[in-house]
Image (cartoon, rainbow, N blue to C red; front, top):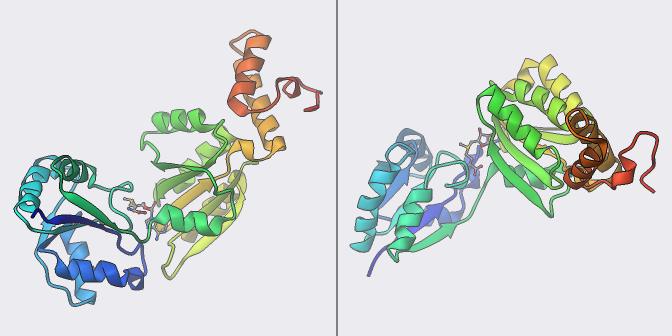
Length: 275
Ligand code: SAM
């Protein structure tokens, strides 16, 4: 009988968030594949678990996956964890899971924390539909391009961001989404300095720029989509119409701006109501 690959979520800060079933599974498997073995060793030490650890990260995953699948097929059960939260969510593991499934190995989840779900659950932004964007590109040009492409998105947007780029990213969002777009910045969730700030993207940018403490730690940035209320949709449509109008005939610019923003076309011309 082949073994099982257990994909185990671990805490995003507070170590008490490891589930009893996750712990039981980590105790039962033959070995644990971990993104950073030193980091995972600390988690295991807290619970008195001693287990062989195998480093599995983006640079060796492709090559290691084959060997791990062979062990699974030979009957060993293995666990996959990442440094924090749910493996495969902006973390390694996709290649291993795909290889295990392709080989007919059972892959079973031990669900638990994920930073964007935790943020969404306390943000008070529309959450029945949302888009997980993960990390934006590190290079300024590519990041701005990505944000421009997302400006007409109607669903709530979820981003991961690091301390050294949070201020710059918020500044870029003011440009791409307009200053008035509602957003929530969730910092250090489940940790000592947990902070959840809400406001417009411009307000959040000002807050982060003014206070170095608000630039420390780990961040989830949630941005409300444009389609969530008619005023925001129209504001977005007018912004796009003005921009597209620089390069296209007015009727084409209006059609594209209406399609992208979801605003009625006739509301885009200055001085007109949505009617
Ligand atoms: N697999 C993880 C998950 O399920 O959330 C995400 C891993 S990703 C490499 C790490 C990023 O997640 C951080 O840079 C930050 O954006 C976000 N993150 C992780 N822990 C967080 C926390 N406690 N509070 C806020 N954001 C966090």
